[in-house]
Image (cartoon, helix red, strand yellow):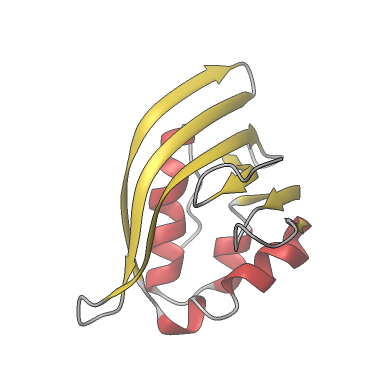
Length: 126
């Protein structure tokens, strides 16, 4: 099933659905082709769909449960900034990772929204 975020705050929900079933291509589809991902925070940003695969290569096979709440959202046309609290748990409820994210999101070619600049643990020092 293809999930499309019709609003910026729905992106995390779509990613969660893809993670739950171990669908790497689905997860990647929620990222803009020219995205940058600041994860881990102390490493150079990963770029594009290749970078997104690198970030999620260890998470997707675990089929983690992603939960979270968007705490702020500001939309301006086809670009938005969102902030969220999130956590990954394994299927036994054990914490894998958690954070407070800041993301710039954009409209994708499919009409949905996707991550353009993803900072899962906040914006790194520039």
